[in-house]
Amino acid sequence: MDKIVIYDTETTNSTIWGSIIEFGAVVVDKNLKEIGKLSIRGRMPEGEVPSGKALLVNSTSIDLLTKGNYSHYDFLGAVENFFTKCGPSLFMGWSNLNFDRRMFHFNFFKGNRYPYITHSSPNQEHDGLHITRAAQTLNSETLKTELTDAGNPSLALEALARMQGFDTSQQHTAYHDAYTALKVLRIVKDKHKENWEEFLKTSTKSSVETLLKNEGIYSIFENVKGRNMMYLGCSLHPKHSFHPSYASWGYLWDCRRDPEPLLDLPVNQLRDVLKKISPKALRVLKTNKAPVVLDKQFALKQKPYSDLDLETIKKRAHLVRNSENFCKNIQTIHREAAEEKEQTKTQEDLLPEETLYEKFIPNKDTALFKTWHSSSWEDKLRMLDKFTDKRCSWFGQKIIYQEAPHILPPDLYKNIKSEIARRILSKNREKWQTIGMAYQEIDTLRDQASNRDDEEELKKLDEINEFIMSIEKKYEIA
Image 1 (cartoon, rainbow, N blue to C red):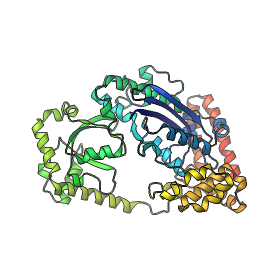
Image 2 (image 1 turned 90 degrees about the vertical axis):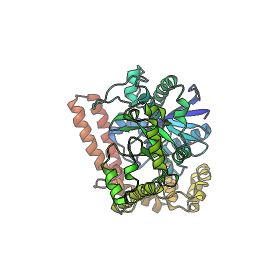
Image 3 (image 1 turned 180 degrees about the vertical axis):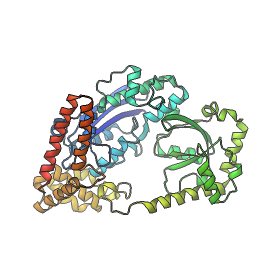
Image 4 (image 1 turned 60 degrees about the vertical axis):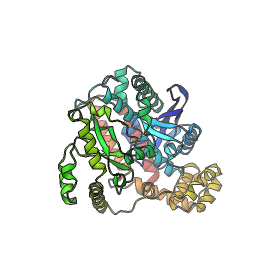
């Protein structure tokens, strides 16, 4: 890919119910030379309760949260336009596949925008943390690191920035963190010139699937309880190399384990044996999470694999891959575990905002998004009936409530406001942030700030508390 977009976000809280309020990105060429950038903030959408902790971390004042130039709707539109103009690109951040991408999924979903823009073909997506973890595991002197409380090298972006001597005065602002990630990746690329392109090869789901289906022995990288680990794994039988219930989960067999005594075991016995093996015999590669997969030579140099001769490893890989019934039994074990987990899930009805991964938006509706967004607010209201997916209609109503409430019929306006009030005034411990939960969080943060004699933070918390009170006052009469 000739163009890479390194990006970061700041949010009102870390759950799917939160909103992205800041976006920063640096666009670079394949040599990591800067060719473009974007730094933009948006207001929090109406009807949401922010997390006090999140606002403290990303230095968001109530003025920034409520009086910025861009409404949340316009902010998302500007970012979507940026993504579109950047394509085709490789999108990357720092732990973005665990957080930022998911936040965009749900923010775009709730905003009647296509959720998967950053990793839909021809775009690709990777994660700077995954790349750096592999580089640091191969050569512990790639980057200067500090130790975590558990005594492990920290790859937290803030810690790496400090140890490399970077400016950290604006940490946890989106553009600053995106640019810091770029500077770290430049060091990684410079010290791993021969592997850089290999690091990037798994930036599409199909590329990882191909590796899992092929006959191969690979070096893979994981973080286990804070430790960066490298494993030598071989692919399974091509018909049974993926989880039967979670399509994006593929398997590798850890080559330190001799599979021969297990090949003919019945399912129940095999299940019991696999549970007892530690470290586990099966490694999972998530095809949509850009795992770094390298040649077997790297893991072969490290224990316990260096204690085995190559022919032994090749024999184990051959046995696993050519034992179809064994691999089928592994699938059966995981299918039964997934079914059992599904049965224990709560049967409560999901709210529309939670259902992105439960049911895809019909193509007919996603095709309507562009026209809907380009229309006047009055036309947006009239067009809601054209959406076949009721979720899109609900999101559209809520967007109009937030952006142009004066055009809503009184009954519809009242219904939307009442639904928001029902959620945020709930006295229960909800999945989203309620008024009550916000007050409890602020009380806890106040105690911590008082113990540190942090007058500045206490002042910020007072400001946040006053804002929460204003939201409560507005919606308690809904």
